[in-house]
Length: 306
Image 1 (spheres, rainbow, N blue to C red):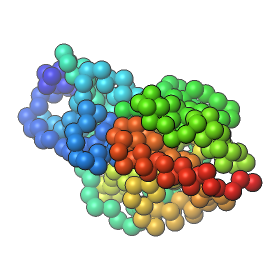
Image 2: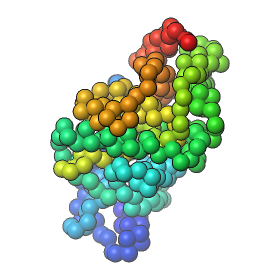
Image 3: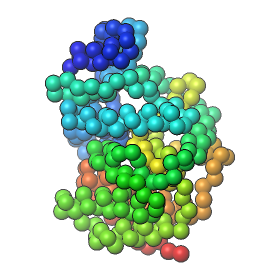
Image 4: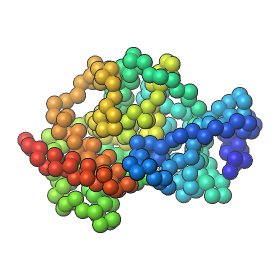
């Protein structure tokens, strides 16, 4: 495999590349590093990750099964879109390839350091500015992609409430039902989620799709976001996700609010948006996440609808 990686980098950069240094790096599950197993078990979705160098140039290398190539292609596409459509910093995609039994994604290596409060504030500002990217006009994405190892449908829609209730909530509930895990009537649950979002006016904007602290980092000068699951949706899905697995520092929210204040009713919509991610955890790991999904569903069912 290593020869294939060297050759792919050489072909893409136009300069010979031979690995002289290789360091294992701890990483997460495909494009959702947050999906850790509460039991600590090793999941087949885990990427192997390395810092590789020829002594002059360094790259970040992700490796997985050969059939994971589609996941890497989707991740690379999202990273390129983030780079071209926003002012957010994200790792540059160098190349993608395969060997006999592996697939790999090569990114520029970013050396992260401890975050400063001012950089969290700037991240909030930059995310708000990214959310002003509304040129597309519909909800969805150019293709289906992945949230963790789970396919994330992205068929274009002009109706946000229908898009999210059908392609996010109902989809995850259907996947659970195929494993004989039923949280209730799928049509009824998705309809309730639809109704919670019904009167919320949404303009489709570019979203990261999996924005938690594990998918952010900082150089000495700027914030960097990575491992995206992009689509055009409600900007609040990103904000909600920042509160799901370890609340971002207040400086982040202050920066965001200064640029693009959140609308009334967000606290209710946040439950629906994060229900999606908890359902995905339940699909991948089961166990405690099924209980957590049931608890969030109970809260959603008790929401007053206006």
